[in-house]
Image (cartoon, rainbow, N blue to C red):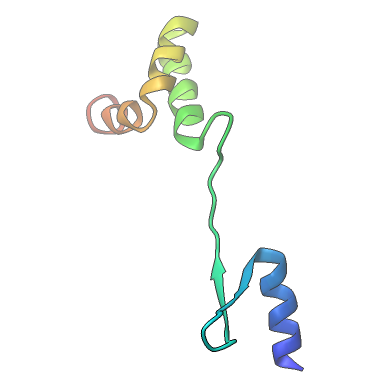
Length: 78
């Protein structure tokens, strides 16, 4: 019963592949971040930048810098 539950769970989260040499199965869990759109670091940098500078241009520039701006702000301006 446990193997049926675990196989169903892993099939919905990962790819199951048959090993062609000995017929055994192995499971690999794929962890994917955001491929498109704004990541958390960029959103945080844009929010901090706009609240400090009130400038959309600087918010865009700091959003491109992402985590670099967040670390800079935390160390030197926060």
